[in-house]
Image (cartoon, rainbow, N blue to C red):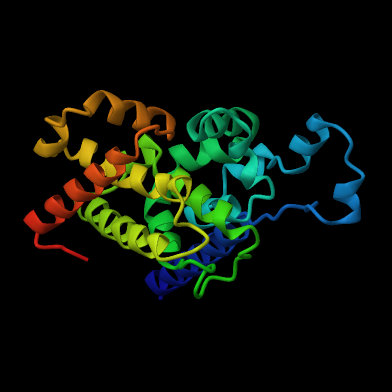
Length: 247
């Protein structure tokens, strides 16, 4: 009887602990969003930044799924376009907004970003309940997140291969799309491919005569030579063919 009571009390304690833990799992959304009257009343840059800053005590408790959700729905996602290069823009965003530093350090956010990326097409998200507003910029923004070295380093070999296949597929889709087929429209996609080839130390990539240009492209997200796009796509196809993974 005594053992039964102890077991019963232990089970109750575990249930209570789980309930408390569930309550501690933070959720959060942006209290002020662009297009609202509250947002329109914001007059200064510091006010704009403060309006989307996540309280640190909440940020620390957010799950990887919530971090990625908040990145996808980030009201100022287009800020990266205001700087000389996409990478410079992202680094400024990391410095300004605590969400992005958390994205880069949080476990499994890379996996969640891949899942979201695979849910996209040239018009928006296929099943996820996220806005497709300003979609050409938002998809490139999502790809910018996936090009970050710490995100790529967090992926398993299988996940990197999965992402490479998806980026190659997106490249073909963009080339067939009036919205994305421009030189600048495909750069973020090609940068994902280049980042994975570099991380996998693919021999053809390492021996490329355009390696200096390619390294600059990886560092900045900007490219001045359209022929390098063709080279990176060709190397990606060769890499996938070697893996018997042509999309």
